Image (cartoon, rainbow, N blue to C red; front, side, top):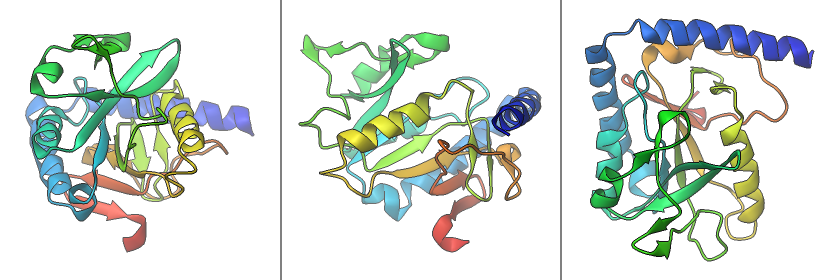
Length: 215
């Protein structure tokens, strides 16, 4: 069963990636602007204090404007950093910091461990105030809130580690909001899942926000 699920994920991942490669840049840009607007006006964003947001690559929902808006809002921004095969969420301290990031693993921009000669705050640090909201990437999502990532398992591993590290001070965990182009969203039950897969709390598309509480 597990082998069949893994193969089904691979097949679906390849199909959606091929579909995305055919999308015009202008269409992705328009949807990204609409998604950014939905997030910034949402209560769950406005009430958050610490936000994790991925740094996009071509073909994904573009998060550049969103990242800058988070920084300008005064909220803490955490972005992904891969080190020794593990995903960490580390803090970005301002627009200058963001604009000087270099490409790391897979050609994705990511921070070093230090900024201005000080160790960056990591979301799993005991003294960190943590993350209320995680804006997540992915290859495909469905309306039962399942997600297919890029196949490395980085987010599943991070969420498990974060939950363990913050279970005493944040027992309910962060909100998981997937950012998705309309072409990435499938009907409910279309994505095969395994026991370790984390479902999303909501999907944010150019058409609006789909949440578990509204379905």
